[in-house]
Image 1 (spheres, helix red, strand yellow):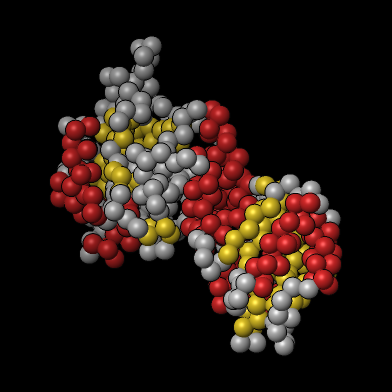
Image 2 (cartoon, one colour; image 1 turned 90 degrees about the vertical axis):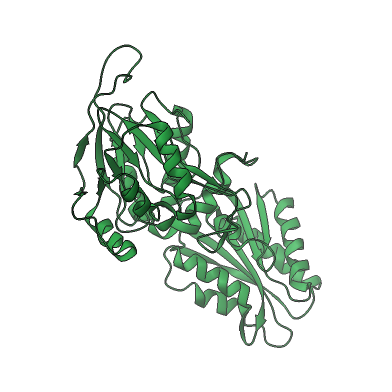
Length: 398
């Protein structure tokens, strides 16, 4: 696939994977993106999952009759597991990456390719020279790859790369999403990109903010991530950067309330359904709700970060918090959940303790405020429960 006259797509689509990274459901499959940059010399940007190494090497051979460099921006195996196959297929090509990445290569492959490695760091460049078809107006601009450190976005060895000739940012895992490129996503970029970001990168907001500040100094005409579509219009580039600025700052993307609940016999669910009706009647701009035991956990994680207000509803279980709710809160904690207003609905037939348990689980997180109104059910919903739900709705919406 042609991206520019001198940048070609040589990645692959994976329709067999059911769980990405062994945990994220990917009904639309997955793309492992790789690119060829053609100057006087030729660089391949990143590899693919080991299962697709042969297909990837064939794609490279179709795109170019020579390869001088393999640039390894990220060592996660869905991109790096094909390095050994590349090294065998192109014995004269040099491998370009950060020093931490070469340490990881030794762990994976038993070698750090010392006889052919090129170690780069922040600010280093690789001049590929000028290709014949550098521009339609006859102006020839050399393809100079400038490397930018992106440690802990989301592994420590990560670099991203900017090509000055084409104004292309090769962004590693940044700005990526779930889904194969030959599968249309009816929800567009945002939904699966958000689930991808908060599932995989979410803990490292500060590091993402640092990288975004570096990117802001560049004149970017397109962004080529390692997963998901290429962003090549000013409108789309502005949109994805705006979303990343919000997500990495743990800001509010959508005004509204997300209600996450678990229910054993349906009574807590009934209270949640009533609460959502009350929120809507009071003019809440958006109400989203999820049963944590039945719906995709990572969809619920992304919604927890998407909205500015969160209500947690669950039953007391073994004198503590129902396991699926505890799991959910722990996911939020691992991603440094912050800057949110939280309300609680609890149920307990003889000794309701879930609200205290949930608040204790959230201790230590930054800038969380908790509603004073706590709705407590003892078994089933009653008239006084509805009054309590009304009070909580007023407080969470205040």
